[in-house]
Amino acid sequence: MSFANMWCSNTSPTSVNNLFPGRSMVLGSLSKMDEFSEAWSCPKGSKMNPWKYSNILKEVHNVQISEKDTEFLAICNAGLTTGLSREIIMEALDETHVAAVKDIYFVENTSALNENTDCDFFVVFVKNIPEFSSHSEASLPAGLILLENFVTPEEEIALLKSIDWTRATPEQGQSLKHRQVRHFGYQFDYGSNKVDPEKPLDAKIPSVCSPVFDRMVQREITAWVPDQLTVNQYEPGQGIPPHVDTHSAFEDPILSLSLESDVVMEFRKSGVVVPVLLPRRSLLVMSGESRYAWTHGINPRKSDVVNCPDGKFSLVQRKRRTSFTFRRLLRRACTCAFSQFCDSQKENDVLSRENISKNCNETASKLENLHVHQVYEEIAGHFSETRHKPWPNVFSFVNKQVPGSVILDVGCGNGKYLGLNKRSFQVGCDMSQHLLKICREREFETFLSNCLALPFKDNSVDCCISIAVIHHLSTEDRRLNAISEMVRVLAPGGEALIYVWAKNQERDQQKSSYLKQCNNKPSEEKPAPISPFSLPVHTNRTQFCHSDLLVPWNLKQKGLKNSGLDSSDSEEVYFRYYHMFEEGELELLCNRLNNASVERSYYDQGNWCVVLKKAPTNKFP
Ligand SMILES: O=C(O)CCC(=O)C(=O)O
Ligand SMILES: [Fe+2]
Image 1 (cartoon, rainbow, N blue to C red):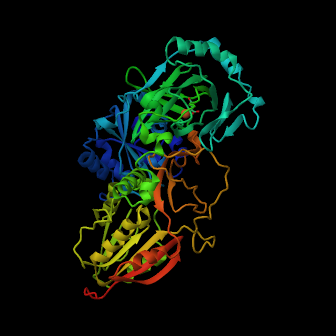
Image 2 (tube, rainbow, N blue to C red; image 1 turned 180 degrees about the vertical axis):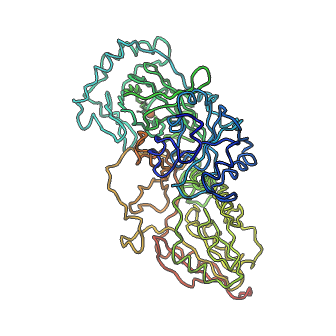
Image 3 (cartoon, rainbow, N blue to C red; image 1 turned 30 degrees about the horizontal axis):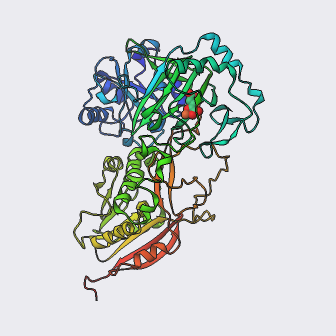
């Protein structure tokens, strides 16, 4: 297939069509833009008009569409949350172009232009891409060392032979969804993410590993000999979710020997992703920051995009890979310099749970920043895709407001409730820039604001809604503040509708659909939150066991079955903080205000809800 005929919508590469049913890849260049619009029969100005992307690219991203084929591609209308990846694009290109294309830029937020995931995405040659997006120049995380050809081909054969997969007993062998695993020396428990030093296994580390250990000590990679070995076997398409090996369980460093196949391992920290190619027979040494503060994981796919020394890309099919991860048990508390990520040091951390319950505002705001604001920023696109249908009771509350009312949506998210009442002025605020951008693309009036300090005059809005917002505040004082802030800006007699998540999720599906999809899957290894806050992690679709907890958000890659990605796999898990409300708790909170009264309270969609009315006059006894 040649590039020349790929730009038109109906001649999309079949591999992409298979991966994205209903979606086609469309390649474009500047000279073809008009023709392209016609082929799509989309009038200029419509959502699918490629000229719109051209403008966004130019104005927002400073990226110029090219008239000719270049070495850079930009992808519009398909964010990473759709599951589209560099690998898939590369797979769809012919060989000449795989080699010619040096980098691909996923244009953030263009997917928000079109919420319909069934629509086509748009791949265009561009003259340049923003520097920060380039993958090729990323340097390795500090402390990460890769030693190529650490074992000989003969040693590789002997090591592989030493593992008898058929002899795996239930305690020693585990067939995880993503891969086969066997432990030697000590069992690593994926439930607690710990090792019990009191329970050595009968299965000792195979003696063929001794020459490898001698080499490690001789080259001063470790001062000790490992006493724990985890052997992972991955078929093409399998992987391991991003994780940090538990600090308190193992010494520094962690060592991983790659056998049978190359693979790309991804290291992540604070939104930075560093892909590292682990060649067959290499030893990866994760020490210091790379061991303690970066997650490592392997994306479950069948091929990897690899940067060649000449700066070009090539697509490498994975084979079965067996890795030997050597570790030494830590028989004391961890004293690493990365206390923020350290399970041993969490208990002593100033940001512990006790402080949160002491209503420490600074701690609370740190918690909300990390586990609410930053998370929504990351998951905005995917979150928005899951939020379409207005809840009927909220819908009717917004719609019953008299024409000309000013309706303020505090924590408006993707604007699900904005624009419902065409006869009034609806305005929303949120703390997520990305969600606000989605609202603006939908031409809603919004502004950035924390619900604790609304930039409105007293008595200035007719009605407020706050749907699923206040439960993200981590102290009672702050929850009360948010409510009193809404009441402050309300005009006398004005009403606020407040929804917060209920700790008790009803099994009656009319009232809550939360437990409906309970799948009772055996507990898989769960990525633990990297967090200084020791909060319990909730298991999705189960009853809530705690009042303050972290709820995982699986940032899904969708529809990737044929690419080797298990479609139920999540790329990354984010943890949102919630305070779960008991029955009556919201009313009690509202009743503490002396200038408003609870008009109505009810249970709806798994939430406790109140209609709060501001006193009709500003004069109070
Ligand atoms: O397969 C690998 O190289 C890594 C395995 C790993 O990270 C683990 O078992 O904790
Ligand atoms: Fe690991």
